[in-house]
Image 1 (cartoon, rainbow, N blue to C red):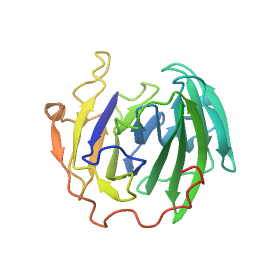
Image 2 (cartoon, rainbow, N blue to C red; image 1 turned 90 degrees about the vertical axis):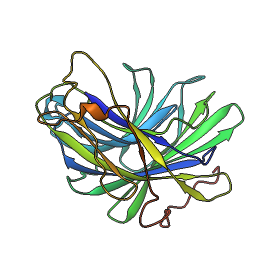
Image 3 (cartoon, helix red, strand yellow; image 1 turned 45 degrees about the vertical axis):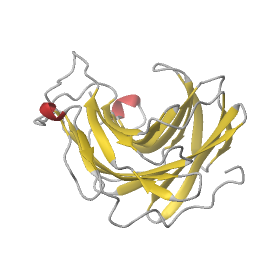
Length: 249
């Protein structure tokens, strides 16, 4: 089961997207995606013991093949780089050293720059007051940096009876003139897989500019699907504490 929020911006083209996530209930095999977009996604995962590594709380930044295979220009300390298949093909960069906690806010930010035929993306996450640059990746034939969303996914489909929940937002987008613009609304949706428990989905207002995503167990909120909710700008205003950006950006 996957539940998602599509973030709507009125800023036109954007150069970066910035989103926070606070997991409130988790289970093995869950992906809490902060920054999804046309071409890839970034977020945090609860990786199960059944994968043979013990339970891992990781950060992951993935980009699909577009006009060709992506090439990693930079990866941070302790970050692994792998090809992936299944839901399309591409490159994923993984930081298993983070060990995020339930109730902790993790912020993700993705930068994008069009460089002729290629696009370059950079993924960063903020935890404990420090930013980490997980990777910069060049993608041949990269499309527009659009279609921004967040989701909660039971990626091994083992938890129809287990609740998963997280709070997302506020969402901010960096415009070409260097200003930050907030998402002003969002749409709640789900995967609509007939084999899953389609009743066990929900989204709630969770603060200024924020909404929850919930699935599994006793969760109920199916009637809200495809609803569009207005959002006010985040109470603390646009992002102020930011990392040093790469020269290409």
